[in-house]
Length: 615
Image 1: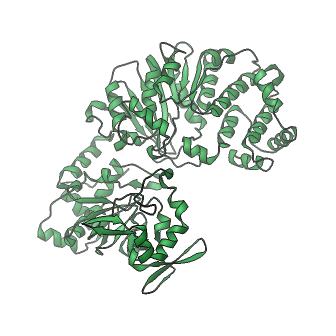
Image 2: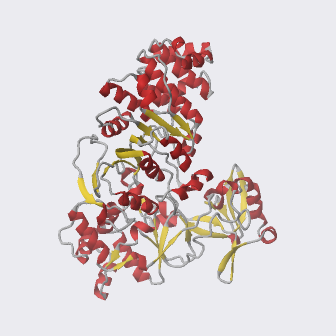
Image 3: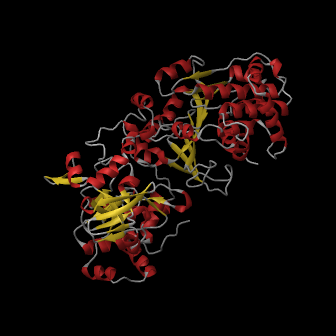
């Protein structure tokens, strides 16, 4: 029985998170024969227990195949954090092998190292660090906890769990002596927090480790956003929360010390990671990156991660980089070396083999880059299921839709057709998957303005009634803080003028896709479009954007997702170049030649004779 099923079974006894935690801990205490009366913390903890629940928990664990250990306790305590809280705070459970790999790499010191996790959560990394130090340096857990283990977290309940886990670790090893816990409940992005932490170790710490929170900028708390200006790695742009933790960690290190985090790998190439890349380049320390690419490290969480280790013992701009897959172990690989000086300040770190670089250089320089074409974002309502729908039926005046079991009629005159490039693979899909959008806008001096409520009520009463019935939902967009022209306006104004012939391009896909739309009034969402009045030009562009050459480019320069999918975001495609073609060549492209023949021809236009293969 895995951790998730254990938690599910425990919830049949109680849905209270505190009760579930107590049941797990008590079962561990009984299993390890811990003399909790010898520990003030555990004695107080046990006194709060519900005896009946604890008996049930012990019985449950005795019937499962899960071996109760410190590692399983850590996993179980992290599993019981409510899903909403996990998402809000960016909490994910770090697998044992990742923690052990990071700790073993950073703790290569002559004497027992001081270890700090600036986003420690329940203390998973710190427990692993304490176990490693105990084994390698033969120190008592009481001394390790008091002298070598330090943590910061914004959540006081997480810190309480971290202290509890360390206490359990010591007591499970028959150590009931006095100990001092070194934890700080504060936002690590606040410079005052770093100042307070440095009071523990005035010269800094030997090791900074952790799994910083995975929170996108749009979901970040206002408090955290207010602290970003203090960190040069994050003072501009819509950075993700984990990014400034590199600079926070570096500020906690002593000279010659080591930082190692597992984080998203997005900072390596993303636009919002440019300040972090510039910061790390300026530090001029050796960096080691183990990139998991699209291999999934975390259970039940789709993420794209890497382990980044920074050693401050030397001044060297080298990056040692390796990309591994799910079949490879963390120790079974060879690194390639790159110099940060080889990348322009803040430019993406594209770490590839020389033969791949040669091909990419050709694909970016032979012809005209896509940035010269009009590439546009789609509509953004922030509540697509309200505005976009597939009609259940239609007549001359109305579309009909079913919502929450109620049939609504919507005036056709306030509706437009929309497409979703993310789910469209070809022109037939475009026909089959068209949706209808309620579009409460009108053109005023060539600018779309939202239709006022009086006009809505007078001209479009049925559409207005549908909005009224969904008003509460619409007003919760942007966490209820946005100031829209009217409450039923789209969440963003982008994409409203994207009329004309176009090629529809998805946000992500597992193959190169560019779908031609000649319906000029069609708008789109969840994707991009390359817009042109020249149909022949679009058809030629489609040949290149659906070619093996384009997929090769995307595969080696873009952001990977699971199942072989890649990002097609505008910033990833604008440097891909389109070679010029003669009229004769244009006619060839328009003649719909066999795919294999066409791909070979396109490679030839870039001067690539030997067709490269994606490994």
